[in-house]
Length: 145
Image (cartoon, rainbow, N blue to C red; front, side, top):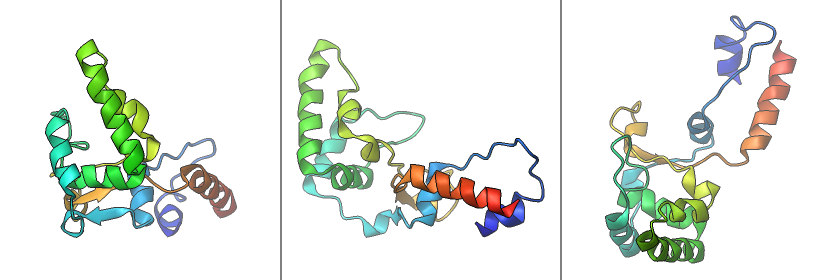
């Protein structure tokens, strides 16, 4: 809240809308994990071989992000989502894994070179309780003004 008070309040006007990235919220919740602290399982290392490598970002195409997907979604959901994706792909149905894995797993951001250090070497999970956080920020915003 100190950042908002120091850097936003002096410039904000009535009716302004504040946008705060989910990544920033996750970082403040200590949900950004250095890749050196993540030990990818055999499953994570092999599952990445089947992930589309998007030129816009790695997504879950690294062993570290895949490991965190397994942990966030849980092994049963991960295996189920993977199985359905494998079955659906020959029929032209792509993206089934992402449709089934769940929001917590879909929100994971992998390490990217252009991110601000040290987060360029971290996997960042989605924030915990994002709706609750948004309401708290809104309430505090009203009190600070």
